[in-house]
Image 1 (cartoon, rainbow, N blue to C red):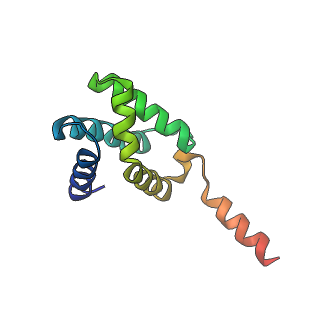
Image 2 (image 1 turned 135 degrees about the vertical axis):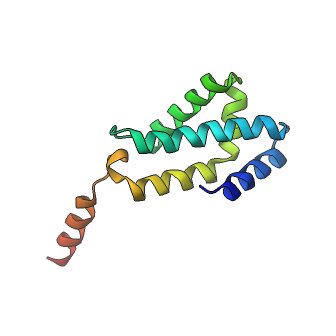
Length: 112
C-alpha cells in the first residue's frame, strides 16, 4: 500500500466516522502495518477472518483505543484491508495457506 493509498483510506474513514484524523490515522497505520509485517515475517498460515481478527486485537493492544472504536475504523477501511490481504496472497501465498502448486494442479485437472 502506498502512502497515497493510506492517505486516501484515512481521509475516507475520517469522513465516514465521527473520529478525528489523528485517531483514524493511528489505527489504520497500526493495523495495516502489522498486517504487512506479519505477511513478510511469518510462516504461519492464516485465513482472512483469522488474520483480520488478529490485526484488530493487535491494533487495540498497541493503540490503547477501545475495541468498538478500532472495529468501527477498521470496518470502514475494509476495502483497503481486503486490498492488502489480496496483495499479500499474491506475493506470499504460502503465508496465507495457499500454494502456487494448487493453481497448477487445478489447471492440470482441467486439461485432462
